[in-house]
Length: 542
Image 1 (tube, rainbow, N blue to C red):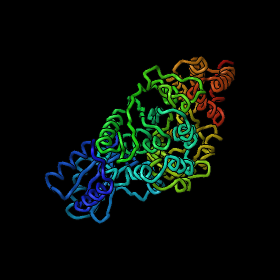
Image 2: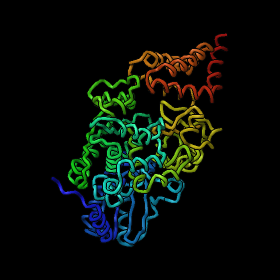
Image 3: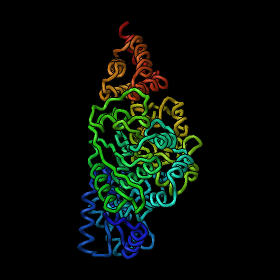
Image 4: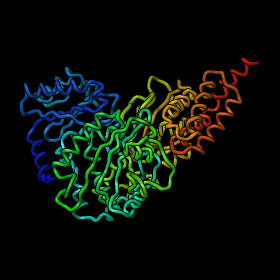
C-alpha cells in the first residue's frame, strides 16, 4: 500500500524551495491564455531560465489569473515578497521582463499590469484563490497552499455530522443554478439507508459563454477532489463520479492525473491519510448534450443509457445511480467545501447576503472592456460588476442588457443595474443566477435577435422526450425568426407569449421549463422592439 503524504513536510519543503530561489516566474497556461499563445511564452521562459540563469529562476505554469482579455498573463515573484503581473505577453517580451527582474531586480513598464485596478481589487477569491498561484499538475503545490488540510482536519478531528453542521452553518446554496440549500441535500443522503451511496460532481457545463467549472477542473483539480472527499465523508458515501463533457479534454486529462496522484499519496483509495475512511473517484465523459446538466439525465448517461430526464419523485437521494441513493453537486459548490471546513461555516456565511451567502464565480463576457473569470461576494451589484470590475462597455457604446443564467436566464435592462446579484433578486427580475454565465450587451444589440439565439440553442439541445419542449421550442424559434425578420404580426406575438406559458408550465425538466425565460424577459423589458418590428410589417401590409 502506498505511503500517505505528509502534508506538513510537503508544505515546509515547498516553502524552503521558494525561499532558496531568488526569482519565480509563473505563466498562466489556462485554456484562455493557452489560446492566446501562453504555451510559447512558457517554453521561451523555461529555455531562458535553464540556459542563462540556472537555479536562480524557477519557472512554472499556473491556472487562470482571471483577466482573459489580457492573456497571455505572467507573474514574477521575487524573494522577499515583491510581485509583478504582466499582460499581453509575447515570448520576446517575456524574456526581456525576466532578464530585467533577474539582472536588476526591477519591473518592466512594458506590459505591466496594474493589479490595483477594480477588476482585481473588487474581487474576493475563495474558489479561485489558487489561480495564478499553484501548478495544477503538482499536488505538492496545492498542499503548500493549504490543500487537503481540511480533509485531514475532518477525518482526524470531526465526525461526519460535524462536517455537515459546518456546511449547514455556511448556508451555501448550490452553484449549479437552482440555488437549493446544499446542506439539505447532504442531509438527505446522510439519512438514506443502505450500504451503497454515491456522490456525483456535475461538470457538464453547457451554457454559452460559461467556463467557471471548466477552469476549476483544469486549474485546481485537487480542490474539487478534496471537496468530493469531504462530501462523501459527511454523507457516508465511498464511491464518487465526476461527470465532464467531452468538449473539456484538458479538464479530463488534469482530473485523471490528479486522481492517480491522489491515490498514490493515500488521498484517495483505502484508508485515506491512515484513517478508516475509504473513497474512490471515477471520471465519466458525456457527449456534450446540454440536457445532461439535469440531474436525472446525467445519472442515465453515467449508467450508459441515453441522457434523458425522468419524472421525480423518487429523487436521486432516494433512488439514483444504479438504484442507490445519490447526491449531485455542481463543481463550484464542491470547490467551496474545503474552505468552509477549514475556516468554519460562520466565516462563509459572513460573506454575501442573508439569503445568498459566500461568493459567486462568473464568466464575464460580451461587449465589455475586461472579459474573464471573476469571483465576487453575493450581493455585489450588477453595476459594480459591469462598470467597475468589467471596466465598462467597450468601444464607447452604452449598456443595454445583461444576460444571466444562460439559455435558462433572462435579460436584465439598464434600469436595474443597481440590483444586487443574488439568487432571489435575479429571480424577481425574471432571470436566474444559473451556473454563472454573465453576458453584457451594448446598445447595438436587438433583443428579439438575442431571444432567437437562445431559443435556437434550446431547440437544438432539447432531448425530445416530452412534446412541449420538443415541439414548443421549434415553434417559438419559428415565431421569433418571423418577428425578427420583420414578417410577423400581432397574432404571432400573441402565439409566442401563449407558447412560452405552455412550454414553461408543462415541460418535463428544467431545460423546457426555463427555455422561455429569455423570450419572456425581453418581451417584458424590451417590448417596444417587438412592437416596432410588427408595426413595420402591419404598415407594409396596409
